[in-house]
Image (cartoon, rainbow, N blue to C red; front, side, top):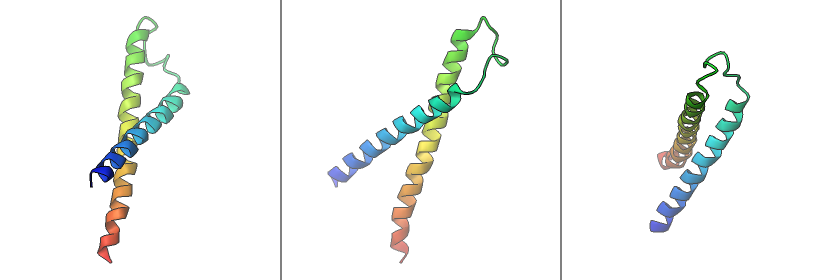
Amino acid sequence: MMQELGRQALVSIFSHIIFIIITWQVLQAVRYDHIFKKTRTFEAKIVIILLTIVIGSTVSNFFLDLINWTQQALYLF
C-alpha cells in the first residue's frame, strides 16, 4: 500500500515536471513583444513563468486523472 502511494507520487512529480518543460518550450516560440511594454521585461518573464506552471500542471493533472480513471474503469466488469 505505501509503496503504491510512493510510486504514484513519483509518477505525479515526473509528469508535472515533464509537462511544465514541454509547455515552457512551446511558450518560447510565442512572440510577446506586442503584448508587453519594452520597459516591463521582468514582469513579462514572471507572467510567462506563471503561465507555464499553470498550463503544464493542468495538462499533467488531466493525463494523471485519465490514467486513474482508466484503471478504475476495470472495476466495471
